[in-house]
Length: 194
Image (cartoon, rainbow, N blue to C red; front, side, top):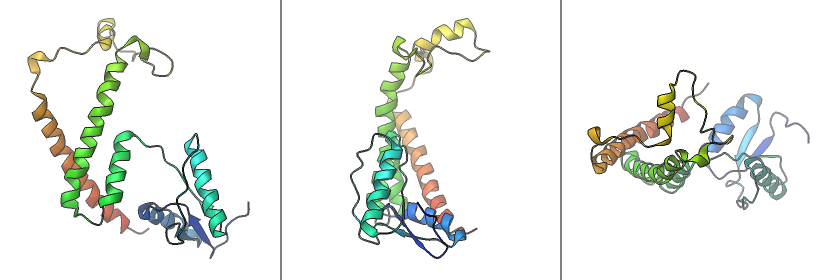
């Protein structure tokens, strides 16, 4: 593997224009120009690796072989709600105004968050979470024994309980606001130059 010289082009094995812009900005001070896989008409390889690193290597090798140029790829770890948000943004961004995209992103996030976290929270209070991987039986040093014993049961929230629907509505409103702010912030950040 040889170093990339200033003035050379480097294939970014991604069809994501946002990722291409980020990597291009990182390479610009070194005189290396980034060109996206989509601009070269390269197909997206199937990600069959067992790890994120394996998938990055698969993508980089496929782009390098197809283009005859040096290639760079990454494969980020994704959480389920983030994957849903990425899929929605990929399909709708640029076609739908941010004002309409934000509530769609909020609905996707809240739906996936509840679908994933509710069962996971139920799992964490079982004896199956008390192992080295989930670390369910370790506590902070200032936790009393009485408090530690209550960590394996759901709290009795009846005196303070409110219906679920208004709470989810509030979550959707907050998620919409933060999605809108995030979209606007991201747009502004793409225009910032060092």
